[in-house]
Image (cartoon, rainbow, N blue to C red; front, side, top):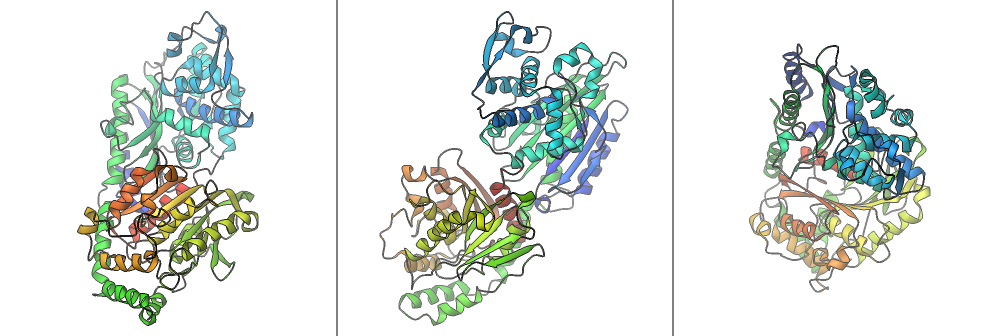
Amino acid sequence: MKREILTGVCLFLLGSSCWAGGRAEIEEALRKYVDERADRARIGVAVVTDRGPVFGVRTDESFPMMSVVKFPLALTVARAVEERGGTLADSIPVGREQLHTDTYSPMLSRYSPEADHRIAIRELLDYALRSSDNNACDILMEYVGGASVVDRYVKGLGIGGVEVKWDENDMHVDVMRCYENASTPAAMARLADRFDRRFDDPRSRVVKRIMEGCETGTDRLARPFVGNPAVVVGHKTGTGPVDPNTGRIMAINDVGYVHLPDGRRYAIAVFVAESAYSPEETAALIADISALVWKGLTQGGKGKKPNKAMREEADAFLRAMPQGLQTEQARAVARAVEGDYTELRAVRAARNQPPTLSANVAVRELSATLRLYEPVGGAEAGRPLPLLIYLHGGGWTFGSINSCGRFCDAMAATGRVKVLAVEYRLAPEHPYPCGYQDCVEAVKYALARASELGVDPGRIVVGGDSAGGNLAVAAALDPECVGKIEALVLFYPVTRAFADGSASWERYGEGYALDTALMNRFNQAYASRIPSGDSRIDVGLASAAELAVLPRTLLVAAGRDILRDQGMEFARRLPAGKVRRIEFPGAVHLFITVPGQETAFRRSVTLATDFIDRRRGR
């Protein structure tokens, strides 16, 4: 990290439709910045939006990696440990002959170069990634079998444009070999993006934590985010020596990923080669580019900010909502509680329109209550896909297997997940525990028939919106499901089936797509026979011991929603590290099941797909 340099910016972002800046605008800004400095440094830029085609400046030119090679090395080490059935806590012998004193090696302050040692692989990774220790790099390089093994591993991931030929000592012996460990901007961007979004075994999570605590190069990619703990930056730097033939720095670089507070993220690699600037000035170039990209993506030029787009769409959605609709729906539920279902049946019929399927999605009607949405062609490369069991919203009283169809179709259309939609019994004719029991049975069905459904039994995810989110959490708490559900995906879930009196309950109680009067009728229809506080209904009041058994959770909230605060409190009570809560400030309730808030809907599909499919690529 501290011993290298490169000039090339590679970006890999997801969710292009939710970014403010367009590809052309960012590319033009980067090209102008790069061209103005072309006489003093060679800079390459590559950008990929939502796994789309690469665009940028010098996307396919080769740049020396320097210590950036320690990033693909770390991935190779993680795979080697997995293949050998070990853990990163395992220690390996380190001989004194491996501890060179004429190289950059912070580990020598702890481990004497005059003695033999046994050192944990985790610690060596920490030295190599966080501190850019060259001895640690070469010890790990030898552990995996040499530079050629790292080269084959990266190419085996289907990523071309990376060449790994030498270890650190080889380059120390002949400094010109630094030019032969090389990568294109596009290749390293793809690798960083793939690692961030798809690698999630225990070893990869350790590597991510180390990269997110990187001690070197904080004046580069991370510089625009210093002092902003809400932004996560995981990166690996490289700093090279001066080329004796040109008098210029061979390369200074930084490669990594950025997670923004609203859930958006992107990967970025900046390569600055043949730099006539000082090391500090070269690092500042990378910081400038990092800021340019970040601001271009989030603020843009002619495009709208995602939050502004969500608010404008939500406002238009509310204006288009028929006046008195919520009052009519509340009256329909109240009359059904008294035994007259005429009006409620009409409401249900209006929310029961079959969805239009995407061209690459097929459905299987497994039963009258279960529908499977799957990408045409089935599991990717013969591997079973994860399964999302989806539970529709509608206050437990209306909604159907069709009302969530647009979302189920969009998820399956990504090609990365199958979706099982569930038709559960509705209140008030079927109050708690009927719908809850149906959802538990759907989970048991999927677990028992994973092979038949072509899904990975280790990646069964349960999700839902509003009341469906409530049912998803309740099912995950059920003794028959505990430990068998890999994750939860919740959109503005009900976590307290009563008037909670929170600030959001009071502020957004009328005119924001879910009125408190209607929510009170929902609660009455579904849960009036059960005292408040029962964790099978009021999941937000579950004990700490109960919440501890829940799997990792994605919770996407609408900022202008009566349920916002109770969902926020629920997320706060989950164990640290288990929940990712994202709020769309301008959005209102219903963006999953009722068309009209397209930016929030599309962003939700991307977030949910990436959250579910995080293991892909390993």
